[in-house]
Structure formats: C-alpha cells, structure tokens
Length: 249
Length: 248
Image 1 (tube, chains in turn yellow, cyan):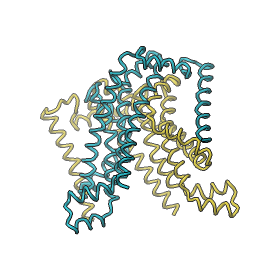
Image 2: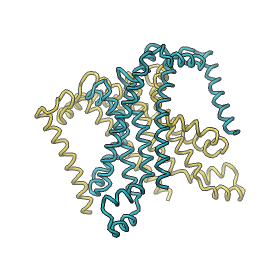
Image 3: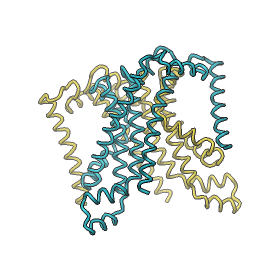
Image 4: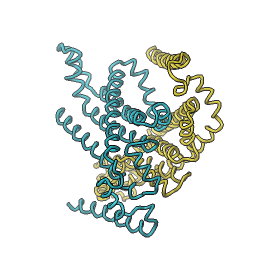
C-alpha cells in the first residue's frame, strides 16, 4: 500500500518536475521556443487547433476503425485456416513471415499510385499494417494448440467443425485477444503514415502541415492529442480483455 | 523437396499473374516483372541513378548510428529500471504507455527539431529501436532465477560477478530477441523517415522515382532497399545464433 503510494508520488513528482524544468528552460531562453515550445504555449496551441484537430482526429479514427475491422476479420480467419491446415501452413508460412517482417512503407507509394489521395489508400495501408501481426500471432496460436486434445476429440468421433468450435477456438482466445490489442496500434500507425505521406485529411496531414509551417506549439498539442487517444484506446481494449477473460473463467 | 517445389511454383505463379495483370491493366502503374528487371539492371549498373552508392551508404550509416544509440540507450534505461525496483515500478508503466502510441506521431516533431537531414531519421530510428531493447532487458531481468543470484552472493560473488556470470547469461536469450527486433525497427524508422521527407538516402530516391512516375525505377529501388534490409537482418540472426550457442 505505502509502496504503491510512493510509486505514484514518484511518478507525479517526476512528471511535474519535467514540465516545470521544461517551462523554465524555455522561459530562460536556453532553448529556442521556435523548436521547443513551453508547456504553457502548448496548452494555448491546443486551444487554437482544438476544433480542426478534433474533427481531423475523428476522421483518422474512423478510417482506423474500418481498417481494424478488415484486418481483424481477415487476420483471424486467415490465421485459423492457415494454422490448422498443415499443408497450407507448411507452404505459406515463409511467405507470410517475409511479408510480416519487411517494412510495408516501401509499397506505400505504390498504394497511393493505385488508389489515389484520400480515404481508400489510408484504409488499405492501415489494413495491411494491422493484418500481418494478427495473422502471424493467430497462426502461431493455432499451431500451439495441444495436439493431444485434437487427437482425443477426433478419436471420439468429433467432426471437423466440432474440432474447430469446441477445441481450437476456445484454446486460441487469449492469443487472439492479444493480437487484436496489438493490431489496433498497427492500424492507427498505418493510417497516420498514409495521412502524413499523402493525406488531404486526418490527423497525420494536420501534423505534417503544422511541422512544415513551423508551428511547434500546435504540433506538440496535436502530438499529445493523438498519443492520449491511442493510449486510451489500448487501455480500453485491455479493460475489455480483462472482462472477457473473467467471463471465460 | 516437394514443399520447396510447391513454394517455388507459388512464387512463379504470383509473378506470372502479376505480369499478365499488369499488361492487361496499366503497365505504368502495375509494373510487370519483365519491366522491373531491366530497370533493376540499369539501376545496378548506375545508369538510371548514378549516385545510388552515396544514397545507399547514407541510409546504411543512418541505420548504424540509430541502432547504436538505441542499443546504448535501451540497455542503460532497461538495466536502470530493472535493477532499481522503485524506478522500474514508477517509470515502467509510463514507458509501456508510450509504447502504445503509434510511433509515427513523434516524427513531425523530430523533423521540426532536427530538420530534413540525416539527424531526424537517426532520431526516429533510435526511438523505434529503443523500446524493444529496453523492454527485452526488463523482461530478461525478470526471467533471471533469483535463487541463482542468492547462491552466487552467498558464495561471496561481487555484484559485478553476479551481473556478468549469472544475470547476463540467464537473460541472454530474451535480450538477443529484443536486440534483433530493435534492429528491424531502427531500420524501419530510418526508411519511414526518409520516405516521409528527406533530401538524400534511399527513401528520397524512392520518392523521386515515384514523384516522376518512373515506376519501374521505383520497383528497382525498392528491391535494392530490400536487399539492404535483408542483409542487416541476416547479420543480426547470425549474431543471435552465436550468442545462443554460447549460453546453451
């Protein structure tokens, strides 16, 4: 109890000290406020961009949500299919591994060339970004299902669909939830990258514009806003995970 | 053998389909492999981009510096937080929360701060590589068997000996994984940074080719960049295997 209080106090003191030192350093002109704005200036900057930033953030999050649903559906079903069919897994896993490991950014110009500027490339790239981590984790989880359980189920005459529904699915739930938690950050990352690269709308293009215009206070405010939003989303998913696993028993 | 044959067949089928689709559709946008290969030959012979070696070297240098900083910073912060429990409990969660932020949000600020040259790419590569290294150190320290540390201490081992003889070998497996992920992410950071805005490096060439609709050159440049990336990962995997053999 007292240890927790001490830790919380240390966290609060550190953050406040950091902000205080930062403000002081800028006020004393030890750094150029053109590049590093004081926290107070960032707060004022947030006031200035709040209306635009909020609607841009909504736009980004909507694209992310669509990309996330696509990535989750494709990744989980693909992972289950490839993971459970042995011949499919053996032939395809080097391909999946290669695409998973290589930086997707290299195909971004191509995607923009094909799909133009706008919503479509952001959703497509966000989906690709989120899809592969989910696919790889689910595939691995299916491979790791206890072989004995599968053999027993089969020898007691379980039909293939029963093996999926009664054995494989319950066994992989924790990994699927974990992969879905990871996937959302990747989808958001993908959407933001496209918006920065070729965006005409959304938070990524707002931030790119602020950086090019040397509007540091507003840029820091926008960065903080996106960070808080994504931390909130991940914490929300964690909370949901916990509830689901408690329900699962 | 058969599985390798099937994989090769799949690869060939993909290339053939791509070739047909690109010819039927728009060869300028979809770049059939038959157009990409001559472009690659031109590129390697330094005809289409004579200054390719300089750009390739710059990107490689950015990767090396970014990764060096990420390893140094990651090991320092990881051991600092892992060995001093109060610090770990206070700052560990903050670090984990920051890791949940999509990294690219930091890039515009880095670009503003460090400019369009190599520094902003190095900073971004460092940032991406730093987290996996730090988190691997933290996870590795948690894996070290406490009893082994106690036994070593009670036999009179100094802190330094405990660290080098018990802790490091005990956590090496996890640590190497983190170091390898860190390299992959530092590479991605540098390349993402270059593509989002730069004046030199492979990313700037890719953007140049793409901006001028020289799509065959673009594909060739991507292939050269991929070779650089795969080479770096192969080197990392070699080191990883060595280290694992050493602990085993």
